[in-house]
Image 1 (cartoon, rainbow, N blue to C red):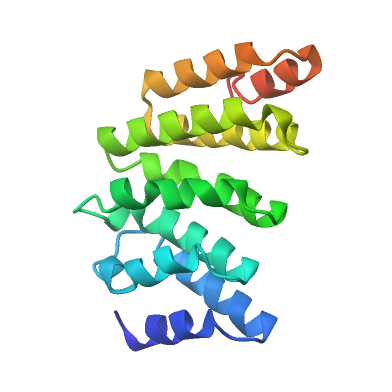
Image 2: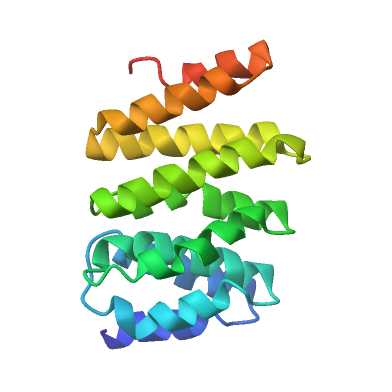
Length: 183
C-alpha cells in the first residue's frame, strides 16, 4: 500500500468529520479497482464492523464490499455473515450504507454470487416486521439490479423477480418491479 493510501486509512479514525469523510472518499476511489494490499487492512475492517462508532461500522462495511474484488483467497466467505449483520445495524443509516454496497460482494465469482443472493433473499424475507421494511426491500432490489447489470447472470434477475412477487402490498410490488423495467 502506498503512503497516501495508508494516511487515508489512518484518517478514517479521525475525530474530525471532514478529515474522516475525505479519507473515506479517497479509499472508495482507490478500491473501486483491484488492489494488491487488501489483506493488509482486511482484519481491521472486519473488526470495525463491530465498532461502537456507527461511522466506523458503515465505513468498514462499504470498504470491505469494495475490496471483495481484491479477495483471491475468498476470505469474504468467512466474513460475509458479519458484513450481512451490519444490514441489521441499530442505526438505520449504517444498515442502509451496507445494504447499498453489499451487492459488490457478488461480482468476483459464482461462489460469492450465490452467497450474496442467499444472504439478500434471507434479509428480504426477514425484514417484514422491521420499521423500515420497504426501504430495506427497495435497497435489496436495487442492489440486485446493480449486481445483474454487472455480471449479467439470469439467476440474479430471477431471484429479484421472485422476491418482488412475494411482496404482498401491491403499491410496493409495483415500485420494486419498476427497478427491473428495461433501461
